[in-house]
Amino acid sequence: MGEMCADIPKCMLPVGGRPFLHWILSWLARHSVPARVAVRQHGEVIQGELAAPLWSGRDFDVVWDRGGEGTGTALIGAAEQLRSERLLLLNGDTLFTCDLPGLLGFHRGHGGGATQVLTRGSQQNQGAILLSDHSRRVLATDEGRAPVPYDDPPGTSRWSSTGWYLLDRDLVLDPEFGTCASLELDLVPALIERGVLYGHTVPSPMYDFGTPARYKQVMDDRNLLLRTYGRPLRP
Image (cartoon, rainbow, N blue to C red):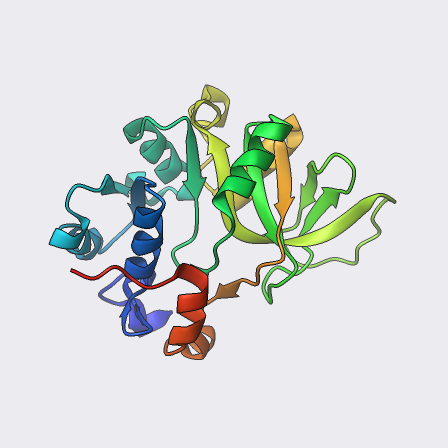
């Protein structure tokens, strides 16, 4: 994002007249979901947002990326702080929500310990995830790699990641995954290899504003934000 994020994290960029993080926290607060915001730099900006009276009494805090090692290590830090049985992981630059009871029901029903939320309503990473149509197990991922022609086996389909995961806390803290610095490049492939990552497919569209051009497309679209997260909480 260049100079736009020289002094603030992406999740604090104004979207619909408020920091994007405010929309996410409002949605989480309505669902009584505790939150840890992973930060690598400019964490004091996020700490200032979380210190607002509006969030008083909420279990919201920051977790620092350990030495800039990657999302995987920040996730472990969040798991060490939180005592929930499961952790909901989502991106700070992606407009997306899904039905939480439906996601939890899928996660419990498949019992793998890790669920990745998938969509076809995305312009990024189109078809990067290979899913078994029968078992709903994630079989392969091409995220973070150069695109290649697909020659997939029968009974499989291609989906895009939303950046949302529901993970059992015990799985995140498994010593086997302690060296997984990157979520997409290390942890997800390790979960696939173990055979415990399942894909929950949803029709909801996803809007990623990780580049200046995409940010401009969504920054003033308040109706899109209201449809996605509902009305933001007010002091």
